[in-house]
Image 1 (cartoon, rainbow, N blue to C red):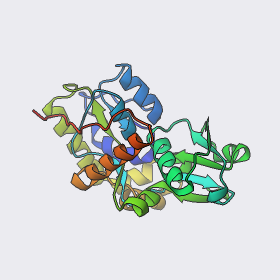
Image 2: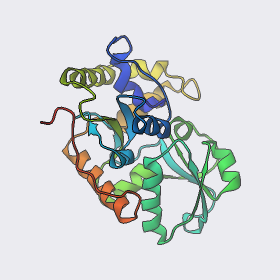
Image 3: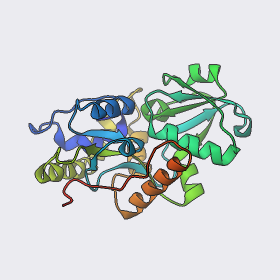
Image 4: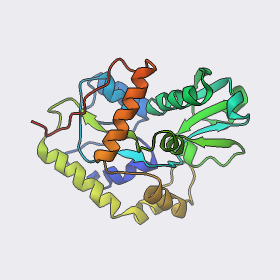
Length: 254
């Protein structure tokens, strides 16, 4: 599981379940571990689904329809003047999304440099900084920001899917799929408690945490979200970021 606030509702109902062992990591490492066969199931960056032989747990996502607040390009120069962009090394999907959006907006490729997610340090060394998750959500420094969820909606009219549970076909049973779905429902019914108890990078953000989970993060992977996901794959393939446009397969499909 990703060690960010936005995943907490997905695992809220699993903590005492002996059928699951939960481990926290950043998105890029989760993808690496799933590709290596070290874990059965991961909340993987959606771009990584196109790079392996996986099936998706149906009905569950970390996504947005519009402003997401926790996936931002911070910048201190006008966007059109950006020449060097620091990329959060935790990220895979958001890096691909940023490259798509900036290519369309600027008509060119800036220089991209991977860096640890420290916004201040990244902006000292670059014109702009892509940061995801809690470091982006709780950043209070001085910088303009481009919300990638909002920019995607503006350009496509579609939702964006950042991550979902995925594993090799047969990695989870139908009963386990149902348990994951039940766990999310329990989490969605406990958002005030999750928001109050989550410290993240900075304590004392209960109200902001709950507003974020209720208004900015989408958790249901339905048909509109799948359509947005496929649009992302088409555009990523068009830029050569993935080798193929994958078919969506789900655990439980015959």
